[in-house]
Image (cartoon, rainbow, N blue to C red; front, top):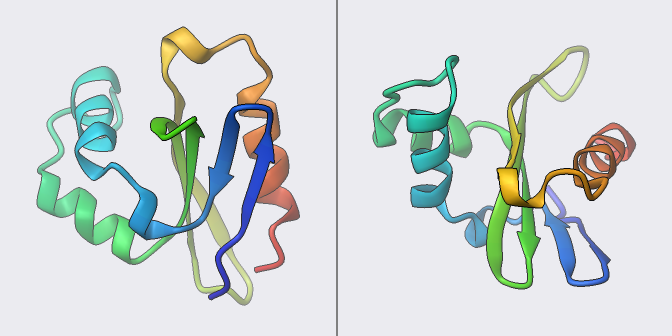
Length: 105
C-alpha cells in the first residue's frame, strides 16, 4: 500500500508504519484509555501490523494516532483514535478524520 503523508505547518499525518512510535502509542492506549487499558505491547504491535495506521506528528514527535481495521473491500472500522491532551483544540482531530475519510483505500 502506498504511503500517504500530508503536512500543515509543523504537523504531519502519515500512514508510514516505520514512523510510528509504538512505545508512545502503547503508553497512551495502555494507561489513558478505557478501551485498551493494560493492553500488552505485543498485542498492540500485532494490531498495528494488521491495520492501516495514521500517525499524527508535531515536528518529529508522535502526538496522535488512529487505525483502520479493514478488509479493504467492503468494510472498515475506526479504532484507537487519540490526540495528546496538550495538542487538543487545534483542529488536529478534525484534520485526522478528514484524512482518514479521504484515504483512497
